[in-house]
Length: 206
Image 1 (cartoon, rainbow, N blue to C red):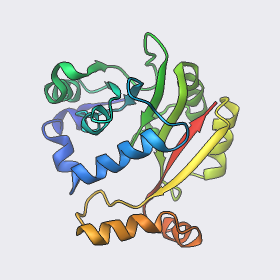
Image 2 (cartoon, one colour):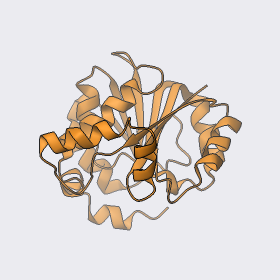
Image 3 (cartoon, rainbow, N blue to C red):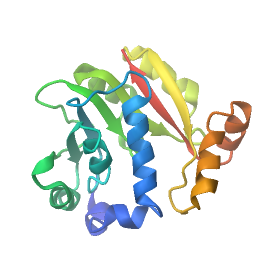
Image 4 (cartoon, rainbow, N blue to C red):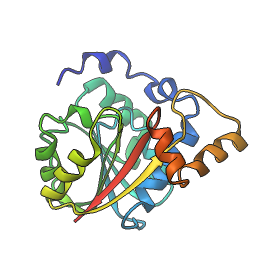
């Protein structure tokens, strides 16, 4: 995996990537904590392809322990500047990384396409993840049934999916953002929206 692109963009990556970073990452953290088996204060989350660790703050605020992993040396440096001594950041490729001890949850956002072999990636993550693997998936890019089959083969058979309708690059007024988020639970309407835009967040547990 080449990191040159991300090395150049490491400074203020989170602020440049999200129009409303606070809302977007708080919602992501909420789903990490609540979708599938609940995370409890003191649980460790390993965040693969963590970038500059923008997700660390809302997870730390929930009392979770944060372990960020990124292949880019510059992203790792930016992440360490962001979190200081409140979390651990290591440099490693998501395909090869294994923590020194099991973690409660593993996350991989905006990066599942960097898995060299997705099924193997799921199997490796399942070996060191006690409660759940949480990641996002674009259903227009990947066949959902294929991904679910790979998760089952890795021993991750308890699956929960949630449409995620918080825009990444547009900051919406609060009421409009809340209304769009409510559509996530609207069944057929949500599935229709996913044919054109947005992603799923998936929680996969043993």
